[in-house]
Image 1 (cartoon, rainbow, N blue to C red):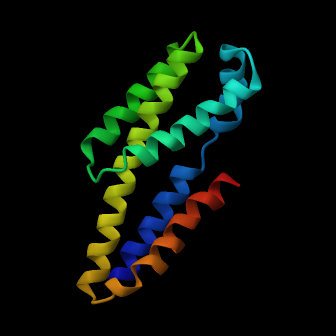
Image 2: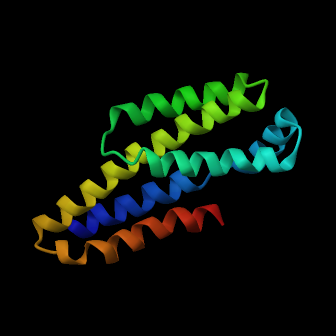
Length: 132
């Protein structure tokens, strides 16, 4: 059973990381903010917010992601983009916590929880692969 769930998590993380939006986002963010440095900082703010808000919960992640993209779309200033980045980071933190708990529980069912970090690394690496 754990192999099936781990495979599904790998596919999920790959699809989350495979974003056709990112190459266009940097151009859009740079245009709105007035510089490539500020435009790129939006991605950094997203990751920082994700680290700060790392809390295991699920339903809020969907709403935060939707609101983040709405703020990106209507964002006519750098600070609107920052607000969207913070909400996207919040969303990432929420689903990350859910995925970690799901993976741990799946491994625990088969008495493999001692291998959690190994499987977490394998699952998480698929998102990085998709970004590349």
